[in-house]
Amino acid sequence: MSIEVLKQELAGLAPADRSRIMAFLLSLQDSQDAAYRGVLAGKIDDRDPKRWVSIDELDRRLAAKQD
Image (cartoon, rainbow, N blue to C red; front, side):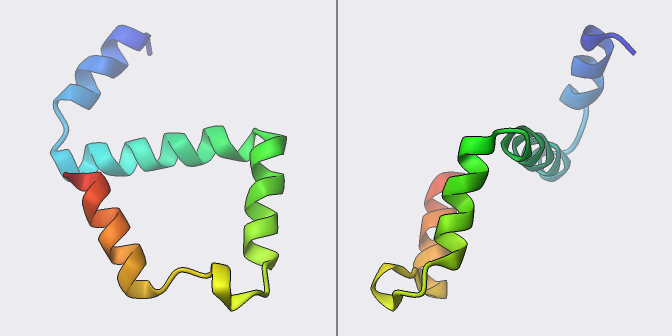
Protein backbone atom coordinates (compact mmCIF):
# COMPACT_ATOMS: atom_id res chain seq x y z
CA MET A 1 0.00 0.00 0.00
CA SER A 2 1.42 3.39 -0.94
CA ILE A 3 1.61 6.36 1.41
CA GLU A 4 -0.89 8.25 -0.76
CA VAL A 5 -3.44 5.43 -0.58
CA LEU A 6 -2.89 5.21 3.16
CA LYS A 7 -3.44 8.97 3.52
CA GLN A 8 -6.70 8.73 1.58
CA GLU A 9 -7.90 5.85 3.74
CA LEU A 10 -7.02 7.73 6.92
CA ALA A 11 -8.77 10.88 5.71
CA GLY A 12 -11.97 8.86 5.36
CA LEU A 13 -11.95 7.61 8.94
CA ALA A 14 -14.20 8.97 11.67
CA PRO A 15 -12.44 11.44 14.00
CA ALA A 16 -12.40 8.95 16.88
CA ASP A 17 -10.74 6.33 14.70
CA ARG A 18 -8.16 8.85 13.48
CA SER A 19 -7.39 9.70 17.10
CA ARG A 20 -6.80 6.02 17.85
CA ILE A 21 -4.48 5.74 14.85
CA MET A 22 -2.54 8.84 15.96
CA ALA A 23 -2.18 7.44 19.46
CA PHE A 24 -0.92 4.16 18.04
CA LEU A 25 1.63 5.89 15.80
CA LEU A 26 2.90 8.07 18.65
CA SER A 27 3.19 5.03 20.88
CA LEU A 28 5.08 3.18 18.16
CA GLN A 29 7.44 6.10 17.63
CA ASP A 30 8.04 6.55 21.37
CA SER A 31 8.70 2.84 21.87
CA GLN A 32 11.61 3.09 19.46
CA ASP A 33 13.17 6.11 21.19
CA ALA A 34 15.57 4.89 23.91
CA ALA A 35 15.89 8.33 25.53
CA TYR A 36 12.11 8.69 25.80
CA ARG A 37 11.81 5.20 27.28
CA GLY A 38 14.35 6.18 29.93
CA VAL A 39 12.46 9.35 30.85
CA LEU A 40 9.16 7.48 30.95
CA ALA A 41 10.63 4.69 33.11
CA GLY A 42 11.92 7.32 35.53
CA LYS A 43 8.47 8.90 35.79
CA ILE A 44 6.83 5.53 36.37
CA ASP A 45 9.36 4.62 39.08
CA ASP A 46 9.04 7.99 40.86
CA ARG A 47 7.90 7.31 44.43
CA ASP A 48 7.54 10.98 45.47
CA PRO A 49 3.82 11.87 45.68
CA LYS A 50 4.70 15.58 45.30
CA ARG A 51 5.43 14.93 41.63
CA TRP A 52 2.38 12.77 40.95
CA VAL A 53 -0.63 14.00 38.99
CA SER A 54 -4.14 13.38 40.31
CA ILE A 55 -6.76 11.72 38.13
CA ASP A 56 -8.70 15.01 38.03
CA GLU A 57 -5.62 16.91 36.86
CA LEU A 58 -4.93 14.26 34.23
CA ASP A 59 -8.50 14.57 32.97
CA ARG A 60 -8.10 18.38 32.75
CA ARG A 61 -4.82 18.07 30.85
CA LEU A 62 -6.22 15.54 28.41
CA ALA A 63 -9.35 17.63 27.83
CA ALA A 64 -7.21 20.71 27.14
CA LYS A 65 -5.21 18.80 24.53
CA GLN A 66 -8.39 17.83 22.70
CA ASP A 67 -9.50 21.46 22.29
